[in-house]
Structure formats: C-alpha cells, structure tokens
Image (cartoon, rainbow, N blue to C red; front, side):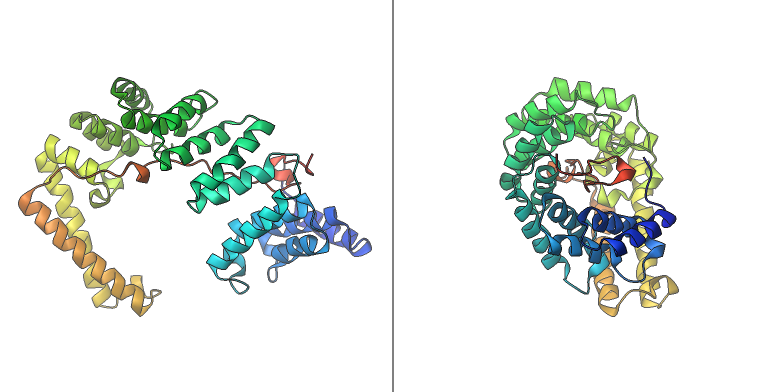
Length: 345
C-alpha cells in the first residue's frame, strides 16, 4: 500500500485531460494532490474533490468531498469559516447517506462527525449501521463512547467490555472500560485493569502512565498513582493541569510536590515577564492573545501561590475529560495508501 507519487499524479492529470468527466480519475487526482502537498499551487485537492461532487453526486463523490471538508477545512479557510465548513461537511455527508450506501465507510464517517460535534444520540444509529455491515472494534468503542457521554454507564460498560477484547492494541477500550467500571461500582475490576496497564507503562502509548495514575487515583491508591506519575516522568507534565495527580503526589511526597508546584509557579512568572517585556518568543502572538495569556498566567500564579500556602483539597474529577475516542481514520474511497475500497460496494 503506497501513496500516489508526484510522477503518478502527473500521469493521472494527463489522463484526465483526455477524459475530463471521469469521476474515478477526478477523485484520484484529488487524492494525488492531497498526498503531494508540494505539487499544489493553491487548493487543487479541494477543487477536484468538489469537481467530482458537483459533476455527479454518487456515494463516492459525496463521501470523499465530505471527508475532506471535515478534516481538512483549514486548507480552504477562504471559502468558509470553520463552523460553516463543518456544517457543509455534515450536509454533504447526509446527502451521501440518502443514497443508501452499501459499505460501512459513509455510516462510520457520519457517526464520527456527529460524535465529534457532541451530537451523541444522533451518532448512535450510524455506528450501529456500520457495525451491521462489518463488525469492527472501533465502531463498538465509539458506540460505547456515545452511551458513556449520555450517562448510560451500564450499556457503555457492556460495549467497552466487548471492544476491549477485540485487538485493542493501544488499550484505549480497556482504559475506557476502567472508567465505566468506576461509574458502575466495579472497583475490583477497575483495580485489575489498572494493575494490568501499570505493568506495561510506556511514554509511547496513548494510554500513558499519567492516565494509569488517574485510575489509581480513582481507587484512592495515591502511592501507586504517584509511582505511575514518576515512572512516566514528572518533568513531562504540568501538575497544575493534572490536579488528581498533583493531589496524589501531595499526599504521597509533600516535599517533591512542593518542589514541583514551585517549579510550575516560576515558569508562569517567567512567561508573564516575557510577555510584558516583548520577548521574541511571543512575537507571533496578537495583542489580544498576549492579553489573554497574561490574564490566564496571572490567575494561575494566584491559584498556585494559594495552593502552596494552604495545601490541596481533593479535586472534583471530570471523567469525560479522560474518556478516549477512536478516530475514524482515512475513509477516502480509492485511497491506495490505506488500501481502502475503490468504490462503495
């Protein structure tokens, strides 16, 4: 499986000149430009995806145009702002769904779009439809994600339990299953999952030592939470942004906690001085962005100073902030790089 090369793209363009209404060729050229950024003079990938869609609204032409609109909208900000590009992508993909596609690609994409827009209840039937066409772990995972967001924790647990047993190579379903265990009072299973993940801590994994530390925090095992934090690397994160891990360290090693909070405090003091002194690091930021940054850092300095003086209270945890979604990935029809289907079949 390989991407379209620059040489192959030129050949495709030549073929298209001889057969300008060939939808498959137009789509290939669009993908070719998408994969060869250096060959673009403007936004040819967008133009060719739109050309195929405008010429004839097939499952392939509508779906590919919608996918590109949604995930590459920053490439054509001159045509729409971000919110209208999202709305246009949703509109086009809905048109695709009305054509009753045979493959799972359009249903999976539409489900993911709706999930990404926090329209969880609307997303559910499309993941279910995709799953009926082809059973795939990521569909079950994202179904569970939707149900968790809708506070149906028992159904989310059942679905994460299924997806965690199906080639969950990055352990994202297993981690989410642990969160569902917490919500459904399965603390023994949560502990078992946390211990299993701790044995495989790696900074290269999506579920890192910090996420695993959070699971031990939920179990109120602050020593093991701190052990995971230290194994992953305390210098890699800002404890201000991880209050549960900060609290665990506060209870387990107050001297180290005070040292780290002081370090985080001093960093913010330095950032404030840099902005106020027009340091070159902030040269590319607008006046409004600098002002917003100053206000944010000053607020955080006050909070950290107060924390150093008073110590920490147990934070209120938002599990939704830790819940992991499965990205739908490349669903472009006829993408040879990913070995995708050529057409809806």
